[in-house]
Length: 293
Image (tube, rainbow, N blue to C red; front, side, top):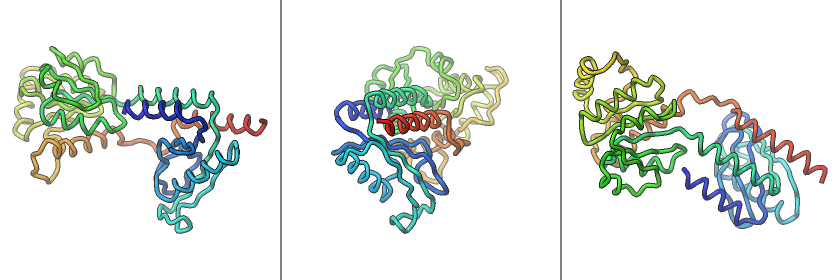
């Protein structure tokens, strides 16, 4: 997702006049949550507030503001048959012409969000590991691909962090709390060592090891003889459980990514986060200042 940050910086740097759009309030069902941002210029836009007729109307209003010089406005839009959508909710949206200080704030927020993204460690750069990296590069996570073999790392062309590590368990030990670990190396013994290291942390969001039910049973026996007591209740093995028998790496990776993302987002609150509150407070201050101009 570093590419998304780079695109935002490039967009704000290349466009002379930009309208900043933020969802201020959501009632009922909506395609995006409060705090969602979007940026619109005369010729392009960055981000999305949900697409469809809602986004079309907001882009149209933003570009009209750029033509007639309006500094700020608000829109209250029902997401029903009136605009050809069927979400059934209602959204309040704020739009404001960005000043230099607003652009700096937006970039700073984006950097903070980028740096706080959950870490997903793919331990092994084989066929499935590279397929995982190829998919994870497009999601709001920081993907770290780790392998002991430089030649395998070199085969990965995904835009993710790549580490050649002689002792990959050190990478697991140094990971931030709440990280996800997908273990699929070329060596079952190494898989066992890395999986036990991830489980011993007791703070991982997800620990998954590639393999079968019999491999899980072997790992269970291995832990009893080689490690301190560790709970296997949250271990995913096999990973990416599905009814599909398709063994192609990209198919396996798609099920695993869905499983990991589900764990990362499980229990996420729908209420306004501290970050979203900051965005709305900054916008409110902008509103007051713009009215005085």
